[in-house]
Image 1 (cartoon, one colour):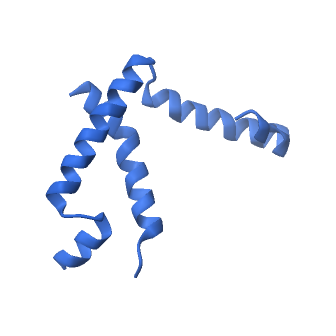
Image 2: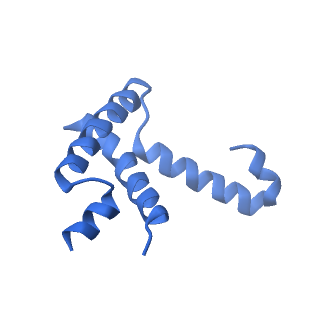
Image 3: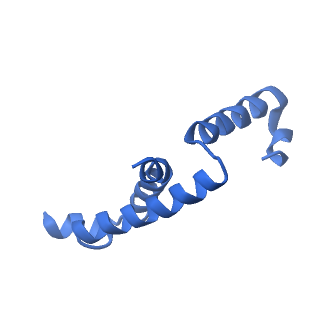
Length: 88
């Protein structure tokens, strides 16, 4: 079971957690510097989908706190990438 978890994560659990913390801090610092809130991302995606729905496909052309801020983006992206590359 441990080997399957390590294969899914791409490394050991501890090393993966450390990597995610470091990347989350970096992304959190960058997002805080540019004053980007995770809600801005969610609302941006929501606005894009609503524009796409209302305008049709022509709309396609208009496309700690730092730790938590970065983790809200990094961890879901990491999980999606790992799920897409997982080999059963």
